[in-house]
Length: 331
Image (cartoon, rainbow, N blue to C red):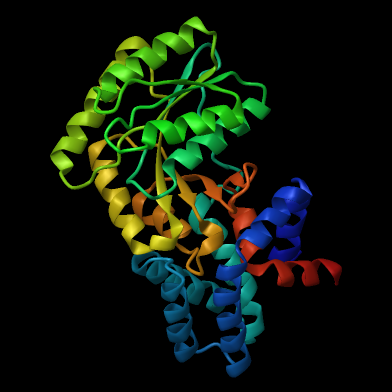
């Protein structure tokens, strides 16, 4: 069975709504990436060194990342030789297959889920610079968790940015969840402490904690996040259960730089990649996973409350090659 047929079988086991969101949400990346790959395949009759050199440029332009591209091209060359592939058209399936392998590291079933405490309050720390969609992500995640039957409380720990507290309150009203806040300029750790106590007393399942996103002084950032984390771990053993870094997909390699800084400052456990629908360079997903060793747990595929999706590499590759996958499945 071809890889495209296997891929179609896998995504058929998931909801049609999710599949359509990935395909629609990744239109810009697909139009950029797939059209270039199709053009490349049309211009070359055989798979040779020049073919791989041009493919390398296409992958880099999609922000897959230089290190990841080098590894991918090397694996593609080996696989093409192993299968004795001569026709450039067949390479598209091999590319798809290798993209999934890069993400999952050979274990295609290890889809990353949100790590939550099954026996009590789960604390999720949300970090990231200002302007990446951090507060919006918190609101959408609160909505999603509430839809799953969980009681959610928000803690407005970004006390430094003007309007951040009010913005979180708006999301609290939209989603029908409580927001624990102090006045602007308050100690973020004190807000998080009160958030934990309120969540406990109200029998909440999940506490989502907003944080300030200042990168101007990395030392201050590290001290602040360390203080917040110490408060959380002191009050709840094993917490925070997740530290999610929110990155803007449209910033490309700048998002990688942010990921490195925050990884140094705190124990980031996963990435939320916002605005994936707004970029033609969606390959940043693979660069983050491969070069940073961090799983992308959620992606933003639109403006609606329901457009924050749990990331799935099979759906991602379908978003890139959807038409080819569908055509293959109909054969």
